Length: 166
Figure 1 (cartoon, rainbow, N blue to C red):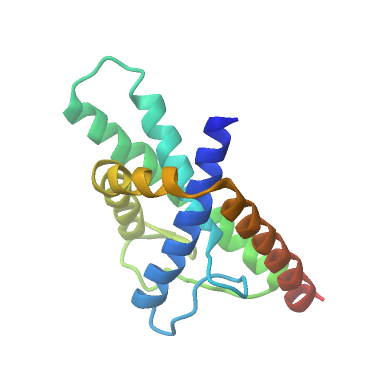
Figure 2 (spheres, rainbow, N blue to C red; figure 1 turned 180 degrees about the vertical axis):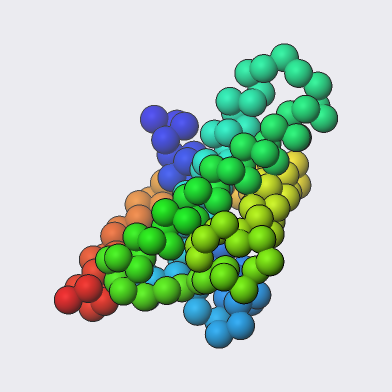
């Protein structure tokens, strides 16, 4: 149960953090499909990076190889999720939140080599620089706060589905 709560807290923190980071860097300031201030794909992505890192740490290899494996596996897995997410959003909501056809090395509309490199570098940044800081913050968040935020998140998902799909 302790690990589940840790990952739940990570999901909420990185969904909110991802929303604000993307809102700063994305030209029109729109991040994701939900109405409130979270973009859940960043929370999911952070959890996936943490799980990939946990898996890699089981191998008896040098730190340099661990970083390389983290970069490679995160790039592939996160780019795949990004591509699937792009198609699902288009299919469910009939909107296109991103399109990489203008990228020189696009794999398809919703994935590109450039973004794969960003996801790989972001995974290294998360594990080696952000996680030591975020773990201290995550440990200090009371469970009740997370339960309230998860409740608000679920309400946001339901309202978004009614507004944007109906």
